[in-house]
Length: 216
Image (cartoon, rainbow, N blue to C red; front, top):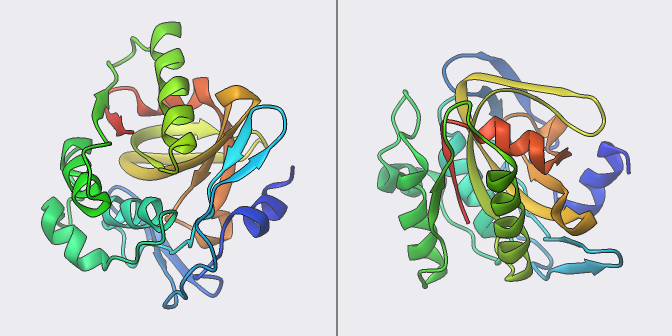
């Protein structure tokens, strides 16, 4: 499926009219208009081991809010509308960004009202088939439970459409769906509303997370 069509079917894009700034720190600046409440946050089932969550997408308001923005997008699949400034304060986010996935997990658990989320860290340059399989299983389990995964990534990765996504200083994204039993995942990315959603092989995602971690 083309990414532009995927964006229309999976995301309720709040930041259609947005302005992207240059890279400064961990992410690309993107300014979005205020969002409207999602019509539904119900999980969508499809045949062939595929499931995606309805996201009320919102772009991050500045270059260092990728952590709070990814968390906000992840929580929106459960119909929650949480102010990113409030979450940034809880996470200790500064102009240097949000330190680690371990600052995201407690906020996810607090806002969902249960200790469903846990942090998983991946080693530097040592991601193997075992780590990829665990990530795939964790994504499938979370999405089947109606929860999005938040991942801390760094470096460059290529999506299934051949588009390159590069964040040398690090970035946070939401994983909001899967297909082929989790071999391919759907990502909601707050950095650029023009590329709000894309798909990626789970192996590529695991290597993108390497040296960092994810909350599922």
